Image (cartoon, rainbow, N blue to C red):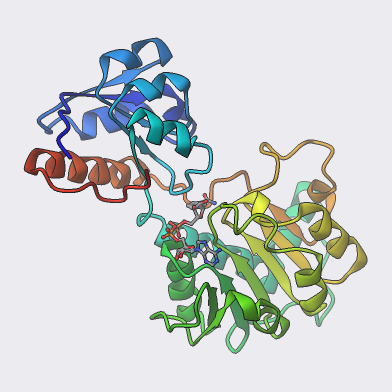
Length: 309
Ligand code: NAD
């Protein structure tokens, strides 16, 4: 594909994750002009780096999403308009892996209780048998891509046995066992932790439903760092309220921001984080390296890295 790229706009929506100027400065040494842009300035750009989608982007040649998840982009319209879409898959393994480990450590060492008690200046020791340790426990990770492998890596270092679920049962490095989607119930039945790292697609929407929660053990915890609609949130809330599962740590939700009236906010055994599992002070550098690589590839006439559309 031949595509000229002389001007890249860093869309102001990026500011929800990092200051867009940081990325502009970081890309200062590339051969193309890079500047922060609002919706009205996009038409002067060949490419745009963005968090959100705008209809104005249908006029550029190339969009780079600073997220791995691209479910907010209109694939068909982009294809019809001949716009290339690339994403930021490949950079969130360690950050999300450590976030998931921190949820599991919070549950096992009861940190979420202590933080809640501290907020009310309350000295309240847990019951003697509430805390536990992680080695020897089993985590079942749905999705064995960048996030899934990062989670398996960090949990493995904590002595947790990690199994994966993917479309086929072919082995994946870092996972002690791999199940195909068809064996999802078998995979979650014996897990102490079930962790979703899947993208949102037509085939993953509500993949985790009432039956999955009914199959999980009563002592098991559920974690979602993929996308909210991969999980039937109503079924999750019912499972938490009925004690069908022990608790949940959730970074993503069917509606974001999580509405104030959601019962999830008030549950003792639920940790809510505001879609920030991948945040890091290095985020703009990691995205910048992906953009730079594709600028170089364009100059060489090579195919895009991480191309989605
Ligand atoms: P990735 O492309 O590296 O991995 C996704 C994996 O999911 C791939 O291995 C793919 O084969 C698998 N997959 C897709 N559909 C499937 C299905 N129906 N059944 C089984 N497996 C399936 O992407 P990634 O970087 O690991 O990110 C995954 C998703 O996590 C993103 O799309 C995004 O939605 C989400 N994410 C969330 C955060 C956060 O802050 N919470 C950060 C990064 C990514």
